[in-house]
Length: 259
Image (cartoon, rainbow, N blue to C red; front, side, top):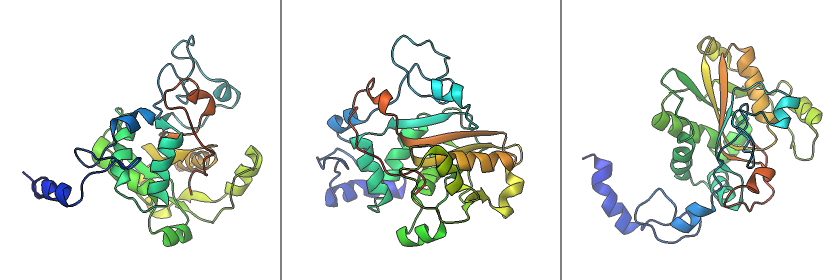
């Protein structure tokens, strides 16, 4: 028995486990109460062969969604643990702005369940934050998730493979072309990590996927740097139309990804 396992009953006695969403008592730390588990919207099948966007009934497996047909993605797939709704929003906000780093373990377990393909030869890379934002917040929530995923699902964690070279303005309200202009030159591969990227399979990790502008910039930088494959992993994905077909479908307006 490890030291952590030995002292956990004492920790539970002093700090009784609570559901991070509603505050109800739990048997053990690291989970949610049954009613709150039900509130999470888990994307299912059938889904788009290119981006895993869930379809409604009657669509054959292997079909491609209209957005991917109109603008084929540069990434090689998206693995989302949940769809963005009120329940997932609370967890994301608590991790991102509430200093609840312990939530990263719970969120990463749900993300890892969607990543059976990840093996030891994959690189696990977080979406980078600008250094000033890290200085103010104290950490990069995407890096915390990537660290936990690397430990659970496998893969080699490379926290600084991507770097944010300039601060970017808020992307909210901007069109697709305006977002691309705002992110032009903002994200690149760290010069000391370029050799690790040649022919590599990369798992790009973030907490929320909204418009996809930031993740697209990351994927482009990784592919230019020589990555052979890039799959995006996120805890919550914003897909309003998919929530209509999923239990736990309530949501609020999200914040931006990569911030």
